Image 1: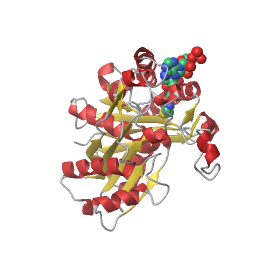
Image 2: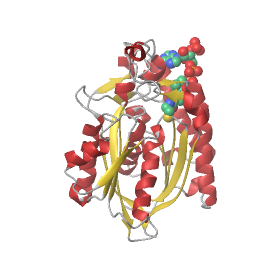
Image 3: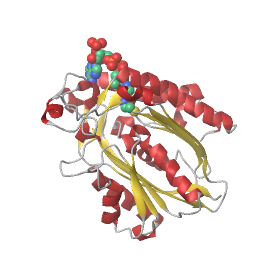
Image 4: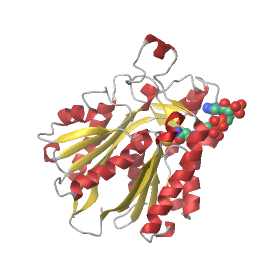
Amino acid sequence: MPKAKISALGCYVPPRLLTNFDLEKMVDTSNEWILERTGIVERHIAAPDVATSDMAVEAARVALAQRGIEASDLDALLVCTVTPDMYFPSTACLVQHRLGAKKIWGFDLIAACSSFLYGMGVGAHLVMAGTHKKVLVIGADTMSRIIDYTDRSTCILFGDGAGAMLIEPSEDDNYGLIDFLYEIDGSGGDALKMPAGGSRMPPSHETVDRKLHYVHQDGQAVFKYAVRKMYEACRELLARNNVTGKDLGCLICHQANRRIIQATADRLGMPPEKVIINIDRYGNTTSATLPLATRDALTQGRLKKGDLVVYAAVGAGFTAGASLWRWAY
Ligand code: COA
């Protein structure tokens, strides 16, 4: 079975910034509270005419250019998102058309904040099956479209953005995906959800009046699960591969709250310089956090060819997991 490696990365964030000071003028909150409880300073917000597929296309173009290939060279395209342009056609179809990728297939993947982690795994397995040579995995979310900006408990957390990773066979068996551990637990479904808009509660005047088309969450329940599960997933994955936190070059976690990442890193015995945190500048961009954090790790010289890297995420569902890679470029 061929190994699957990440061979290129592209990211996009919209230019407009929403700072904690801006939010102070919108809801009863303060820069100090947000910074202390979450680590967030600012987040990027898409212009009204920009949708998830627009950001996804921008990120994809950067990744393709970095690898020096055309969209027509791709075999498959996955778009990981909880904010598709519409339910159908899939955002993958919209992106495929805009990129001009011919004769490929693809689909959207929804696993809330774990979407991109799962997408990387699915993309890698298409390559490992030997049936696909170039799979583009995109994580893109326009969270600002499903956030109630009068609800201080959620509106401070999220931002918009996109990232794309190209996954290809590795000529050298030492590089690429080593192992993964994914787990879903639907018993936590009520803790974080967008209640209306689906078949259970179709959109109506009443659902809009009751703001059920926005993100609703029990922040503490999510926090407790995330702190426990993110560590447990990493610990188990590392243990069964005989790797310790100290052996890792980099820990790249979903950016939902600085305290969740810090707690995971501390328990794994990871020194701060190996833990990538950029939630201060982007907030929680849901499906885009892992590629955005990878971009920072690369540009800051903190992720280099040959490094062991763990990706970890926890999200609504609940969904959780971690994957272990040896970085290939
Ligand atoms: N500004 C000021 N005060 C706020 C506030 C805000 N933006 N949001 C909530 N508060 C208040 C609450 O009303 C509460 O007041 P009370 O004590 O008078 O009732 C107080 O702050 C504490 O609220 P609490 O929810 O206990 O805070 P917290 O320390 O748990 O932090 C979160 C809240 C949302 C930051 C935290 O729970 C969290 O990050 N949870 C995980 C969320 C997440 O990651 N979601 C995405 C899934 S991947």
